[in-house]
Image (cartoon, rainbow, N blue to C red):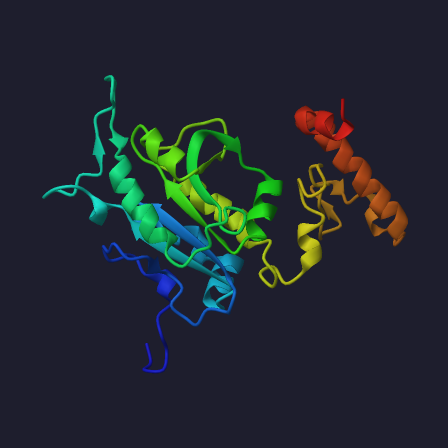
Length: 266
């Protein structure tokens, strides 16, 4: 590597342990850029896939920033314990309220108290399902703090005290919230101005209008005996749009009757 080249911060394989927010976007950040703060036991999991492709490029350009707050340094005692046995008995361990609170207080430094301007979210399988509308709401905020759970979850008192929003990636259980956090951040960051480059890209894709996206085709014109639908090569833009709309509705009815019912109303 030449003396003029600087390593990309989001390419590092390890993140040093620190109670201070770790900014993974070392280059100059654009003023007012959207920010994500992640409270996690595994800061080395980030940026992960967020450091690749368009989100990684936008991270380099300072269009958004990513910080991690390592939960471990806030742990109790010699061994920095962050969890304890569940009250009332049961399997597993629960993240302590006092430990999580200290990390959240650190993460809140410099952020607005208004939850609309800066949501604070716990990634939980019992939370409200994450969807495109939520991604748009988050993208319209100044930034977000995501709390990644582990073990059997987080002491309910800290969730209540900080009025934390619980959000689920889907009806399944992961070993922790880090993967879910990356997925949700990706869905949000791509909606930020300048990240995709073409704003219309986000207007025609699945869920943008309550419908799944229509099928896509490209060259070659014939592959394995299968041809591109003739309407797409007709040059008739009105007919193309009509076809795409019809296909989007068909796919939504077939694959997501819940979305179709919601769109049709009671």
